[in-house]
Length: 542
Image (tube, rainbow, N blue to C red; front, side):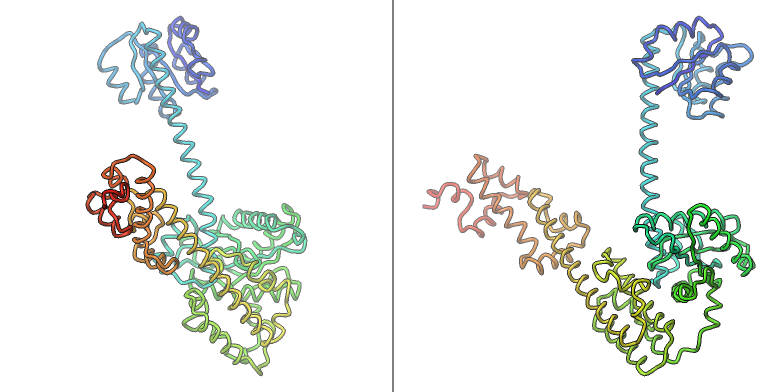
């Protein structure tokens, strides 16, 4: 609701306006009166005024000075001037101060109402624009949370992107760290007290833990937290500019993580376990550090430890007796093969890994590393294609549900083969469904508009595909070229109009997008063996 302030040292002026103007009809909720600029300023401190109407000639402070003061303190208030002086300098100064109107006394009610109504309409328009802006900003921020999580997943799963692309996304999504900054990865897993919660509640708890961590770490660090691809929360803690790596001293990180666990217990009434990585230069090595963190989480749960430094786990590891697992990281990587649909090559790579592991003695941690390398590739492709991991394998990807996968290389290898078969089948079905959707969309667009603008290019633009690719896709899926389909539908429409309407042939020609009736007649005869005129009146052909 609009609130108005009337300011004039002659109180009868403000009283008259307050009583005679139909404020309610104008949408004004309340009208305040002040007999001096000082009283007006005091009132503005206490009331949410939208429009101020003030006289110019007043003692101690004139109306122009009042407008200037109000503009400095309350820039949203729209100001109008009333005066008995028609001096141009006053009008010029008022314009400079962005007064919305300048009315001479005595003011006629009609002119005053018109001016107030104009200001109210302008205010409401500003509010509508502000509301749309904030809605757009909110939607953008909501989208950003999804985009940030997607980018975090890509980095954790080892998706390479150029420094220029990554820097642009980090800047656009308003997250730190920046490229080249020192950072530490915290992998956080909710404890048993959260186990009975459903998925949305768990996601909410992880988000709350991330916010607590951000509040706790932010005085000294930049913080970026997100749900990780696997069953944990990933928090990247990066050094503020110029702070160096000293802030990543073990004792300081340990103390902050203990405080985080304490605050989660106090606020969320539950426990968390945390794996703390070595510091690294972002983003180099992040995917490898994430794999090590997942391995540490597996060991952490087995040993029932609440806080674990990755470096302790790495020092305690026995040397790997086989280098076969490294095959998964050699170019082309498993992620690259899966992403590009090279299924046979991906199977050969995985079989080479498990052939190399045959007959070796490996710890469960080392088998778990192979498991993580494979799931990283699978999760990345599933995530990129927007698929549901639960449809492909509801349980196998969660080591908390089935730890027997890493009992032996043979068992893990058989599981990997099954996963690739399921993933290939799901992606093939997904791709086929996507193509069918495009064909249906194209046909609906053609049927809705057979006018002059309907062409392969205009249709391709509307489905956001290249015309050449769309033509090949349509031909491969339907056996008919898209150009021929457009012509066929036009001819079918022409037959309908020739039979069911009295429109002249040149009118039908124009409506179907043909500029030349002779050309239309030629195309029609090619399809039906007669001209449009002969079709409408068979006696013409005899």
